[in-house]
Image 1 (tube, rainbow, N blue to C red):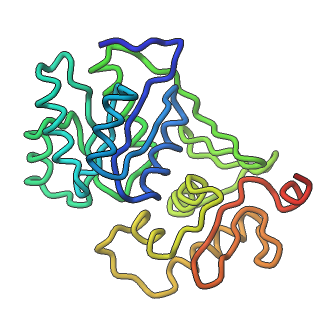
Image 2: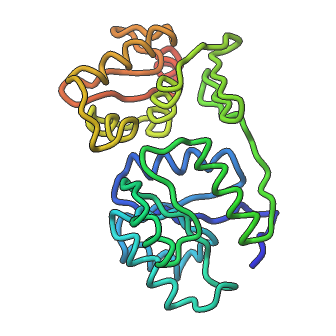
Image 3: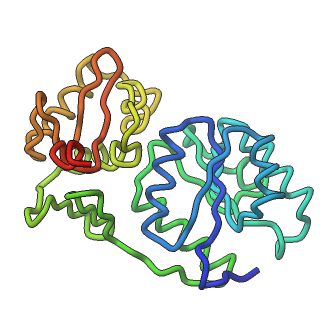
Length: 244
């Protein structure tokens, strides 16, 4: 199986978690990939037939195991089955070995590190598909630039000095630009479902990130509060929004 370098590599993302799908898709924008997400096994199998993806990123906790087995049955032979990167919230050895037994090529635990996810996808692409995908380390979202390779964040000409957790929070919010994300979703994405934290831990970290982004609560520049729901990332400034 080889990649047509004139076209982006097609990647299927299977998960019922919207925020996780968006995180994976934003991360893949650093390479020459085009990703589509499916919310369940049925949708994923239709996409396999109609779109014919060349790689899959699969949430093993939400039907991914069935998907991996199905494509193994329908695409017998290691030379034709599309490679699979499995995702799971359980990091124990038994879970990882089970994923490999089902046919996964690699496995990662959630919460995800975007740079590790990108590195693993690039390795799978090179090892299984025999191609090196060009890397674009810097994503531009309005005034914001995120350099995943060097872990730098810039707003205009200014470089921000963010902690690792603040960078992960910014990346998560940017991945879901324009959509409301709840505090529970942020908690799951950054700390994991089993993490026990203070009730205002998310608000504290959003506040600290806003300070560094020079993002006021009343006139949001990047992160808007949605009362009673959560937060929404604005990829451009409020002034640009008003002018458009």
